[in-house]
Length: 207
Image 1 (cartoon, helix red, strand yellow):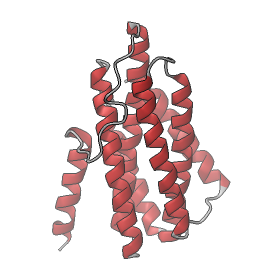
Image 2 (cartoon, one colour):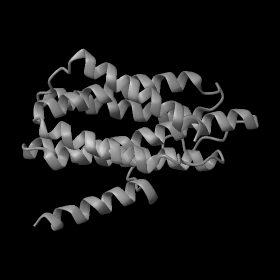
Image 3 (spheres, one colour):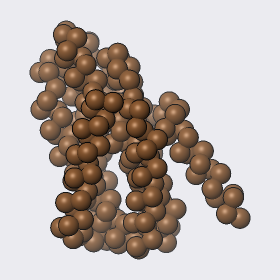
Image 4 (tube, helix red, strand yellow):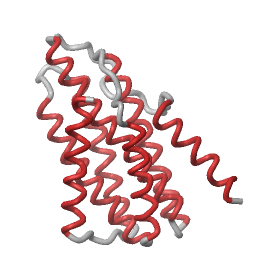
């Protein structure tokens, strides 16, 4: 029945947006000492981590929407595995935000709802296009994480380690999508994805 499908998916949405995310792996850099940073530096890093946390909220919703629509059981399993690793990223970024005295974005429910709709639409277009969307998303996230690493205070190795491991995971997700037959997206769609990402980044950095 439809209700039997919707209830666990609704539960996933509530947990992603409002609950503390679980993780099997230890948080990267958790054994490192906290660096000496000014209050301005801490606010800046917390804001960067808030942006990354929003990105992981979006990733959760995208994967959920795509898995719901996927026709290939193998692709669905890979989407679910990737979604789990994005859940771990949620845990790490949330913990780092708390360590720096920051807060999560007020817009998280909005990001989740929009990304879930996009993921479901991508999945309806077929697995090849859905995987193409996934691969392009991960490529853009990889570049985004690399730029954030460069914007960290040089002494903040804890945050650097978190972002580096996230980048490694995102690269693997893109490679997996390509392995399963991802199609290259048209340039206008790639551009639209970049523009929407910039909007989310600007809003999430301040709120």
